[in-house]
Length: 306
Image (cartoon, rainbow, N blue to C red; front, side, top):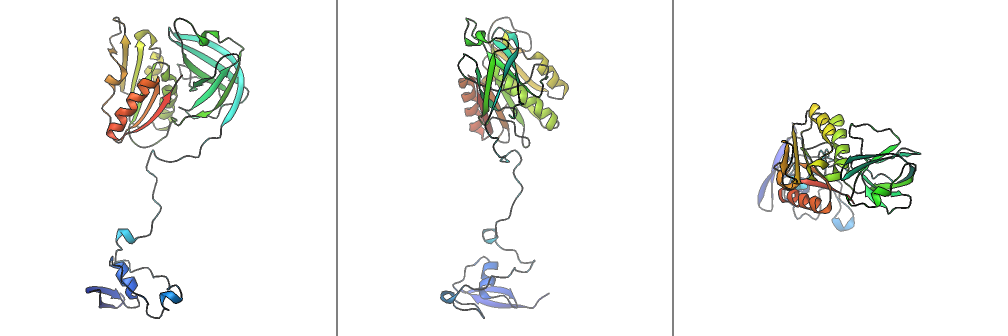
């Protein structure tokens, strides 16, 4: 152990190891001494003083004076480099009616898409307005590497979606948005309204493979019970250990026993500050969930669909 001595700095007794300067002693004790010169060093106006040596291990520096040290990233808050925007072209190869209000469209692309689960893309079917859609999987979880699967809401009275045809050229440009799946940290709360289940299904399935032990809660809503088309997907999630799954519908008196009545926001689990919330669907539902998440300090990643 090195020799120790005492000195008084600004009226305060300070213990210091032999060889330390008064400035080093004051810094180690959390003091900023008014010292113009150091022993054996030129005055401040004549040149920089020599760097202070590291204090003995048994003397702790105050936190405010410690150098900033790199710390481990907070789980779930890692900042991944953005994926470059890319364009993919292909043709429509499958069209299937999933429910009265939802159509599944599969496009086979010349090159595989580079989007993460939950990302969106600007999708243009030749001759139709551009839509902002989230590529997903088929209800049973299948998808080829060069396919893009979309769940698209349909107006019962007809609309542009009914004009989509087989072999129709399609163009994807993305990614769009920041609602993609982020592994790690906190319970994963997934909220889907209508065709928004497509984006949520992609996130949920990826999370069950990447983080099988992560707690997950899922709430799915539709205007009518007939539009709850995702039974096969939900069965798969239950088999992988997701116990908290809630279904609800706004309309219709005839509902299956497991479908609750009322708006989706009335059937969400109690949110916690540590939750990570992904919500996909119409703008009103997404906005309401964002408000609920913000009220408890939970992180929320919105996916608004056309």
